[in-house]
Image (cartoon, rainbow, N blue to C red; front, side, top):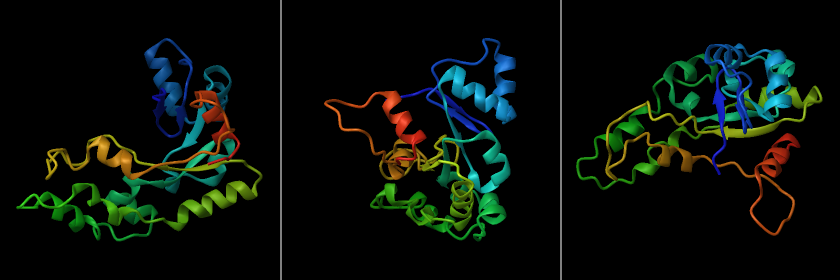
Length: 200
């Protein structure tokens, strides 16, 4: 199931429509990160409000937009040397040699899907913010994000794909939802309601 949305300071996911027809106005709204825009996205577009890159956001701001979910892991944050150092208290370049092993594989014998495994580290900053939101009475689901944009390294590896291919990164991260028993595949509203209710 593919659903429309956008990523900026906050994310609007599962939108049924845009808030504005004019592209410039719409872009300004989606980038402003205000409680008013978050409220409009929920009521007018049926969107889930999700906070990406929680490591760089304050609990006060997140509380003001009343998110349905926040990222409790972000692949991009764990790979980017600047974010690792500034927000995750991790050494900037310590895990990059692991990727180089797959890029410089002279015999093409390594399985590149394992190339990013050393970046799967849970950072306390996410749980500290999540715990504070929950302590404030906010029902908010924790999600892991792949942040896959195919813009990290374009080099091909043993399987013929880019090291940062969408297929590779999106299969590395998965989120699971508890949904009501039904006779068929769940529809979008069922999935969105499970996230809203914290059943992730």
